Length: 254
Picture 1 (cartoon, one colour):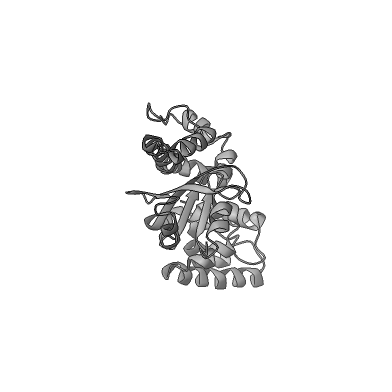
Picture 2 (cartoon, one colour):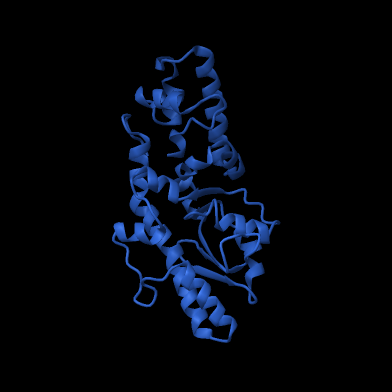
């Protein structure tokens, strides 16, 4: 989907992008090979072609900051397939809702194979090095919650990756509500131990752990683990629907 994207080119909006798609030009290579047949002013076509060649070079060298800055944040999901070999599904637990008055208790990171848990008072600081390893971040409500918390506590993390906050593309295809509600709609089940848990219960479990209850921490980590592992499942189930919605009325090319 990234190589079907034109809205990262300066001066090209979604209207022009859809006009290009509607003409059957759904990839960068299509554009370069059929430029003369595209119904756009010659100067505009030349500019787009130049930017496409630049984008191809940027993709070859995996210039993540280039795409992260040039593609509108709401469309970062388009780069998932291209950078899925370096993805981190991220979710945090906190003592409250405000980054200014609450603190992070747990950060969970899942790379598609392994789950890593970073816990306050044990290894939370190691998240700095961990986050720098990934090209693509996936969260749910992370743009407003998880990432601001992380950046406030660890300002040295550059956050130059591409980032998909799944809450927004999911809304576009009619999947609304919180993460647990969307899991339910997609038939994704939680374990018996964590079924029905929410953020308030996560806060309570951390308080129990601070009182010396190690089992409370174990349950909190399992709850967080399911959050991040389920993000991958949700994205795999819905990605093609994101593409279909994006190309609605045009000829699709993933």
